[in-house]
Length: 165
Image (cartoon, rainbow, N blue to C red):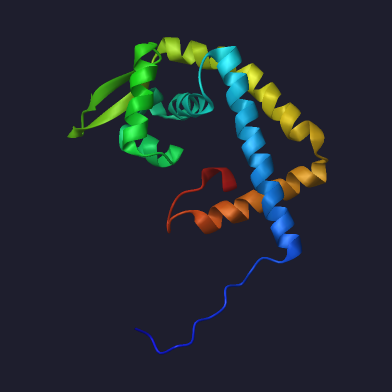
């Protein structure tokens, strides 16, 4: 037990509280909007779309399952469930990792790539309508800078942030 006096928390100012609540509300609405659009137009939730995008950008459209889970910020269990659904649709295939017999890779199939290519225009239109068409070029630059600072402060030490380059 410490003898130091308890310090009072640094409560948010009224302006900070308002900004925080606005951020929470906007991000919740945005995630719901994108999820509904992808379910309606592509028959998949936003998280599945994100996994397909990651795999499409990976060398040979393959990525270790552990890396995919880390990048998506989801548990390995949740990833395993998502990949099982994507496999059932024929969009992803699991493969043993040649360099580590205990590991597995997720591979984006040709069918998965076709589904992604078909879903991408509607998704981009939804993102554009929800965010970028509503902001000025200066606000877009500010959003980029603010999100970059937040991500940098939250990433584990030494993590690569390729989009900040």
